[in-house]
Length: 181
Image (cartoon, rainbow, N blue to C red):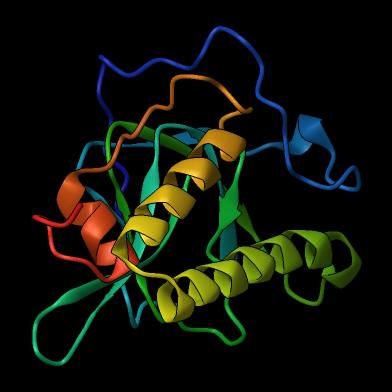
């Protein structure tokens, strides 16, 4: 993990709706790690053993393809968790889209947290399955529309949606060119 500090980053003044299960004692929370825009949170091939919760900002999770193209598999916003792996290695990169604060929850040796983590992991799986349907069965206009609806829902159904990612990021997420987005 490659945390960087910045005096310009501050926590939001309102508490976030935590997606962590109630079994996690909030008094045992780890300090927030700060990442500047474009900073790597973890790299493909690095040892896994933790999951992450976004406190503020946005994170992109992606993989570089053999031909050099980038495929973004997910965006994570405040209150969302990411970094779950089926084994001990990260299979994707995670990078800060803007100034990001994350809490890192390390797995204790021998601890069985499967009951507590299953709902979080399944939420991510459901979002990934929905993304596959968008990529596989929708045209460009439908993909962009589905993306905007998803972002609005994840931000509480606001009339005005904040898009912290670039058009290039959105294109790499939806399998479209920047011109189409």
